[in-house]
Image (cartoon, rainbow, N blue to C red; front, side, top):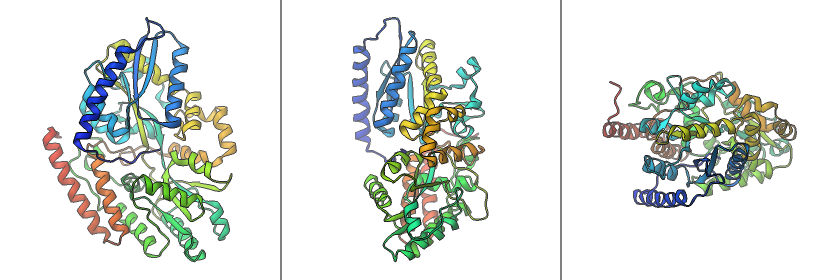
Amino acid sequence: MKKRLWITGLIGIVLVCVFGIVLNSRSNADYQPTNNQRIKISFWHEMTGAGAQQIQQFADNFNKSQSKYEVVPQYEGDYNEAIQKILQTHGTNASPALFQSMDVSTGQIRNANITTPVQKFIDQDKYDMSKIMPAARAFYSKDGKQLSMPFNTSQPTVYYNKAVFRKYGIKDLPVDPTYSDIRNAAKAISEKSKGSVKGISVDAYGWFFEEFMANSGQLLANQEDGHTGFPTKVNFTNQASTDAMNWLQSMNKDGSFISFGGGSNALSNELASFLSGKLGITMQSSASMGQLEAGSKNGDLGVAYYPRPDGKKANGVAIGGASLWISNDKDAATQQGAWEFIKYVMQPANQAQWQKATGYIALNKDSQNEPVLKELYKEHPEAQVPSNQLARTKPNSTNSGILMEGLVQMRTITQTAMQQIYSGRDVKSALQDAENQFNSFLTQHNLANGYSNK
């Protein structure tokens, strides 16, 4: 599931980084490979639960399949903790050969020059990247070159409780809903239940704010969302964002909307309300599907694409999740081993198993022919909806991510604006303040780091 991104204190980050260096130096020294001739591939990741288990299984199977490399997965904390460790350890023996990094750190990793773009290995092997879903690979590319390999990939998705819809005689949502489709259903639920069931909840979450613009074909930052240069300004007051925020606020005003606040407790309460039949519609990551399916009666979980403005064709939404990067501080043989493991996990059967185990989308197009996914779709047809949404998206600058540093800070700022809007603040005023605040941050950040488009 896509994790909420919070800014930790400087002291905490430093302690995590120092502790991580000591810990990983010790693990490197103590490591005893099963074959002394094997090349160790240290792989840092941020997965827990089913994701961590599946990564370990991939590593075990890969290690058994050949005798040249030994992949050693290591959990390095959440996304924010891991990125600090990666940057702090680069150039030391403690650094990983291969690492996973979240979507919002793409610009930061690229600008840090600590990796070898996977394009180098793609060219050497004549690896067929056309098999990987275009919208996913576009997110992690620059100037036509693949920087990293998309891995755990999610899509923002609409979920609705079909049992609630049936109870109140409301038609299922179309698979490609408009703002009005959702608003009408949410209002009907609230009115017909006499307020005992809320129609919809949408987290005050920066990722969703960005996706409203992506699906409308609207740039958030200049320099083509960072794809042609270092962004110097953002635009939060465009028509797409104001339309989306007015839509959310209108549902709040008519009583069909409920906000559960922010943070993990709010998310848990929202999902519990949805599963108990007290909430009709919610918007979450596609990686939440496993949890929602487990808590719903078979056939009662409805899934639809991310909503689009009325009268407008969907432009497609940007992916969430993370990708795999190869460190450039390792020798050629070690980097090659990292690439071999990347190719392994991207095989159709492995991608199919990854989706079944974790809920993240299988990115190899041939995975859809694998028995494990055919079985999954037969039992849960709704599980195919996020894959279809991703597959139909034609990449462009507005739906292929924002290559800009400071996205964590930006999401905190836009989250605050959304919460203010939910509380009744004027939409334009809230968005203008957020835009001014982040543009001020971005100017200082670019100046401090020497970023220029000249």
